[in-house]
Amino acid sequence: MARPRTPLLNRERIVTAALRLIDEEGLAALSTRRLATELSVSGPSLYNHFATKDELLDAVVDSVIGEVDLSMFGEAARQSDGDWPEALRDWARSYRAALAAHPNIVPVLAQGPGRRPNALRLADAVFGHLVGAGWPRGQATRIGALMRYFVTGSALASFAAGFPADAEVYDAADYPHLGEAHRLAGHRGAVDEGAFETGLEALLDGLALRYERLAARRST
Amino acid sequence: MARPRTPLLNRERIVTAALRLIDEEGLAALSTRRLATELSVSGPSLYNHFATKDELLDAVVDSVIGEVDLSMFGEAARQSDGDWPEALRDWARSYRAALAAHPNIVPVLAQGPGRRPNALRLADAVFGHLVGAGWPRGQATRIGALMRYFVTGSALASFAAGFPADAEVYDAADYPHLGEAHRLAGHRGAVDEGAFETGLEALLDGLALRYERLAARRST
DNA sequence: ACCTGAACACCGTTCAAGT
DNA sequence: ACCTGAACACCGTTCAAGT
Image 1 (cartoon, helix red, strand yellow):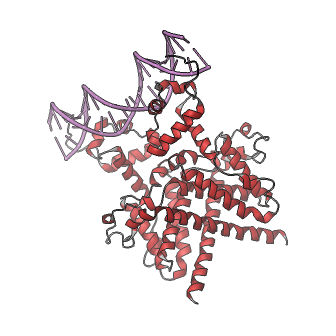
Image 2: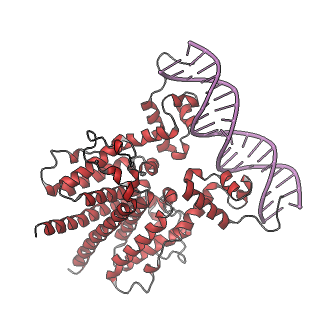
Image 3: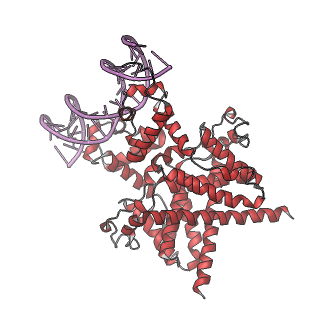
């Protein structure tokens, strides 16, 4: 065939197929040869669109981050300083939802923004909003970091599904308190969602406490 | 050579060498052939000690979890109900330290305990202590989950090191608030440690608030 | 410019053969 | 029981050749 009149591939088609493969069969299932087969081309064809597999993975990761809603950090939203917990809450939920839809790529994404535009935009929006709300820059950095820790950790894997549904695993002599652990996997959605929401609200309450202390110190 | 009089390998030697390879060159660098070369044997030799590469990885993961201190959950420590935040704080620090020493294996470990004894022991100790301190079982499960979310997220990768040290990356037109982000990587330890400690204390404060509400409801 | 097949240095794993 | 070399079906990537 050689070069066709209209190209068979483009970056977007490749990224979409790669993400689907990662979602359905895991990160390890994404090989350039397998992906090429999926796209009905030969293995080396991909190298006309991405220099390396790593560059392709970068594009996949940034497309996932692009799904995170940042609108709550816009100018219109920043009317009053006290709004930051609401913004952070809405953002964290959207962030988690975007990542949890593609858990197998989270370990790559968690390495940080690197030079990926969508990831840098996200970091910029969060940091800018917190500083605008009155947080000192050093604190704003830490809050951005700890929120990423919590969200990536909660999207990386289901807590409930990490416990085998087989009751035989939990020998009462070895694990006296895990007698019901085999039932966790059956309530996967509720357990994981509940843990995320409890953690998020606890974090926001704890941060609000620190924000009040800051304000009190400033007014003296 | 064939079978030597004293075995060349055992599971412990293999696990130690595998963890070193993962730490120094990343999870992708761990191949059975490479590991065998490192141990001065041929590739297939490893299969006398582990059925698959996955089984070997499981052993590596559990050896890392085995480093987490659980002594704060012992009988002696559970004198009074109000002690749970201190125990949780000490445990979270030890948990994070153990994982952050081997960040490249965290994605594997974050999949949950599976059938790994040390991981199950850890889950059992945390859950048992929280229930013993008066938390309802459902809440105790969520707290165990959210703590794992936060700790694995914070050990998975450095937040600071995720931002390239190259100032050119942060074009002011695109990222108006990231003008200093290139300096983050230089303060890697302080930023990551600070974010973890801030997040941990905020979480514990937020949870203490909920614990008080629980106690208030019970006494009415 | 964009695709192909052939080739290189790798993988995980199986298996028969050795002691 | 524990190691070996040979073999199988895979990898990521390069490159010359085609249109």
